[in-house]
Amino acid sequence: MKFSALLLATIANGFPLRNPLEQSILDLHLEGSDFLLDLEEHLSHDSIKELPNPRTLLKAKYDLLPEVDTDALQALINEKGLKDRAEKLFSIAEQSIPEYGHPTRVIKSSGHWGTIQYIATELRKLGGYYTVKTQKFKALDSKVNSYSLLIDGVQPKSVKPLSLTPPTKDTKPVHGNLVLAKNFGCSLEDYPANLTAGNIVLVPRGECSFGDKSANSGIAGAVGVIIYDKDDLHGTLGEPTGKEVAAVSIVEAEAKPFVEKLTKDPSYKFETTLYVDSYVKYVPTLNVVAETVFGDHDNVVALGAHSDSVTEGPGINDDGSGSISLLEVAKYLAKFKVNNAVRFAWWAAEEEGLLGSTFYADSLTPEENSKVRLFMDYDMMASPNYEYQVYEANNKDHPNGSGDLKDLYVDWYKSKGLNYTFVPFDGRSDYVGFIDNGIPAGGIATGAEGIKTKEGVEKFGGVAGEQFDQCYHELCDDLSNPDYEAWVINTQLIAHSVAVFAKSFDGFPERDLTKINSINKGFQYRGSFAVY
Ligand SMILES: *[C@@H]1O[C@H](CO)[C@@H](O)[C@H](O)[C@H]1NC(C)=O
Ligand SMILES: *[C@@H]1O[C@H](CO)[C@@H](O)[C@H](O)[C@H]1NC(C)=O
Ligand SMILES: *[C@@H]1O[C@H](CO)[C@@H](O)[C@H](O)[C@H]1NC(C)=O
Ligand SMILES: [Zn+2]
Image (cartoon, rainbow, N blue to C red; front, side, top):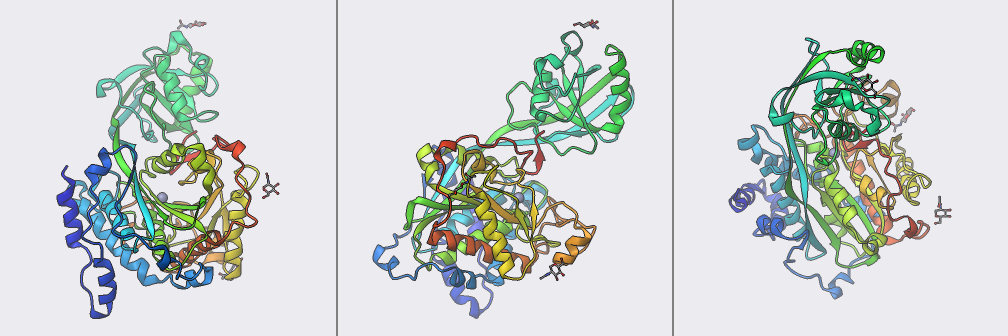
């Protein structure tokens, strides 16, 4: 695809004239809007590439700015700023309609390239306050076109493919007998060699990752694997090793008769046919990272949101909201002097399994890593049936400082007379790569597919028995989805978190450099997917 024409169209369609009162805002917008990020160049480049800055912020001019102050920064956050950007982002998502039939900002779509372009352009309008870089990486692109399963002549109703499943051999149906793996299928010895080869494995969820079960089945010569669990699985195989075989899940109730029979008589023959038509391939995409030119670069305040959406919709709440909150805070921070450098990141391919943030955190050299004092994750700031959720991180199971960050959020909600609730710090967003690399992290959210309880309604209002976001990962995550009250509040809290640490890390734990690698690989989720 030729990116340039597409992106020219992005710019030409952007920034519509509204009324004269907005003229000054328009002027601000037009400044730098002649800029086009040359995506082809950035994608052909090795990993990190710095954008040329339209101008350099002179130290003398910077020195005239007031020192960052949390109240002053929070006071600049306003609903109109968020709303205007949401409208812009939705129009960018609509650029995907010719290819996808609906608005989306999924990686490799015009809507996602347009999002990257928009973020870079907006940052360049800030008078040279930030150094802006892109980071190229290869993301997994995958799709299941169709699938089917027949066991002993019966089609289980609950059958679902796992994310990142390879197709069945030659993308044709495969046939074999159903074979029960021993235990949880986490060891090669759990796959009886004389029974497994050429057949289809049935194995329960648990003990190890779905990817391990699929790869073990493949190594044992199976042509497919069925994983069963109490409820529907929303699982992923994770990064392919090449050993995996096609994997689907069914619920325990449907697996039970076969499990019982095969437990008694392992060589009993249930004829099974599995068909998965899918692909898993790598496509290049970009993270965008912007760091204040000034401030102490040895003590960096890092925060991030994800620039991509799922295929199904435009992702205005998930995570247009966080992406936009970061742009607004970045814009207003540029009116202040900072003591510590602030690094804003917009990760790509979060929806494919936290790929951009993980690639970034893994790619830091030990020296670069040691300078990142903490990472703050802002994903889904404006769910319509929201709760004020704080990730339940702590200083013992997570890098020291994660608990202090949690306290900062709690203290702020308390100071505003707002309720908050803790939610599991279990791997559902982009903090995973940072925690796994020893960097303290945490964040806030407003809820995804979870259901609001009666107690939740007492604390936050809204509707009991409904999802926090009924449009989570759906087409309707559009301009009518976000709740602006929650969004403004949370953007003020983001501003607070930035201002506090940009001013000082006094009292915040030093980095423990003995634990730079692999402090915790135990997250159950990889973004929206379960991994084991
Ligand atoms: C497979 O091998 C096991 C011993 O390893 C044996 O007990 C079993 O009978 C064999 N099954 C078949 C179908 O050959
Ligand atoms: C906080 O929750 C309590 C119930 O636990 C409720 O009575 C109170 O009104 C809530 N406060 C706000 C600001 O919603
Ligand atoms: C975290 O760091 C603080 C000092 O900043 C220290 O007092 C505390 O013991 C550390 N906690 C852990 C669990 O290492
Ligand atoms: Zn998200």
